[in-house]
Amino acid sequence: MTRIAIPDDSPFGLANLPYGVFSTPGLTPRVGVRVADHVVDLTIVDDVFAAPSLNPFMAQGHARWVEVRERIIDLVSGDIDGAAVHPVGAVTTHMPFEVADYVDFYASEHHASNLGRLFRPGSEPLMPNWKHLPVGYHGRAGTVVPSGTDIVRPSGQRKAPADAAPAYGASRRLDIEAEVGFVVGAGSPIGAQIGVDDFDQHVFGVVLVNDWSARDIQAWEYVPLGPFLGKSFATSISPWVVPLLALESARVATPPQDPEPLPYLREKNPWGLDLDLTVSWNGQVVSRPPYREMYWSPAQMLAHMTVNGASSRTGDLFASGTVSGPDRDQRGAFIELTWGGKEPIEVNGAPRTFLEDGDEVVITATAPGPSGARIGFGEVSGRVLPAR
Image (cartoon, rainbow, N blue to C red; front, side):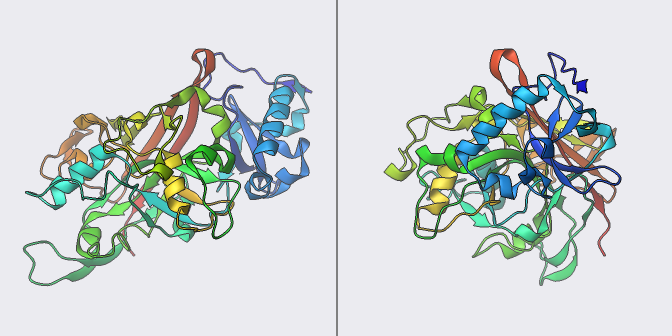
């Protein structure tokens, strides 16, 4: 038997207990929970965790999530079979859940306003609908990949404003978007709606997201139907799913919403979240986006996503869109940070605008927990490989 030492300042203490899928040599992938610098094999709690994804457990619903979390807290607070405890550095992490559908939103007013000024100079930064509904688009579930997966530079059609005609080739303006993702555990049938006040009954947990973006491909294709090839080539997520149950102390009000949303989007107790993100480019911190600045909450996103009767399923992932704040060093995309490439920033002593082959981007985040604790989300990382 062994007892896990949990430092008081650990971002993976009893207040957190994020779930993930891991393996070690000779061990098939299964669900574990991160405790300090260790991973505990949860098959000692229930056979449902022998699956190589969280989906079977998440499908059991909110009451079961609460029950199992209490059991895990009791388990890791005492002596555990040493064979079930692994140093985090000795495990390989995998995709934590099977992605059913993927939807990406555009919920930051700061980000949307900045891109409006860049893409439509001289016009109103926000489109007329932006403050009336959470704008989103359907992504590609099959290209959501786990942290650490290399990202191949995408190719497609590009056409700069001065070009007479489009040309095909590798993206020259490869970018990132630092986002927060929400994982649906308990779905809803077609024809039903999920109300804003039912958010926590359906959403299991939270991950970090890097929505890689080819800005030159995106700029040429996005009118009239929005993002397509400029976004669908890769979206990275962190390996640890922080339970929504762990984030009650991080809950804050959203910024004032004016005009008042329509009734189906009005929250009695808003689901804003006080998350602090950090974006590192080749090891240098270049941005600290604050999620608490997001205009639309995840509960409003889910309500809008299902208000027309669209079904939701276990494993659905919906992301917030780029997290940006009012200051330059709070912008969560390089197109904003360098103002479309016109204002380079210095990275390790060199002026930089968009991503070059070999670059690595790492996004991390923390949130407040109970009694002064911090909740850690781990990291989502990816390195750029040359186009094929």
